[in-house]
Image (cartoon, rainbow, N blue to C red; front, side):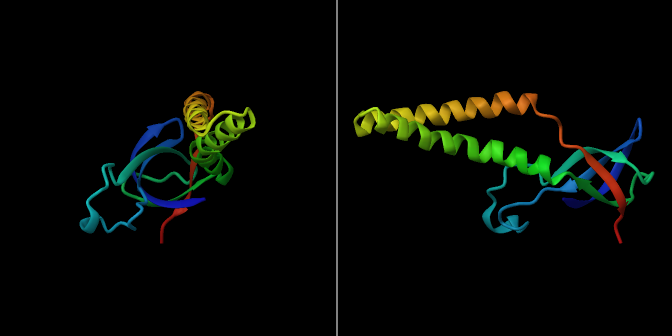
Length: 133
């Protein structure tokens, strides 16, 4: 996975801080919806393999596997356990109201697992691989 960014400062130990634009659901046209509550730029540490200097426009690369794994953990785990909770309640012969309660319990368990595994997960490593043209 590649992104473009600007080097903001050198961190030492062969790394640099890079400012990258965060993608938005509205495609960056926030004037119309004004619902974005997060900063539109992120500052991330990256391995500086091309010896970029502050102000340089660079191309960043990250492992797709790490990004996709994090996305699956955050988005799929709670939803999957929501359905598993409902199915477990239905298989146990519970009424619809209690099945909803077990599905919500599955959702909460999924959220707890996201927090637990998210803290144990390795940080996604970004690497500067070239200069932006």
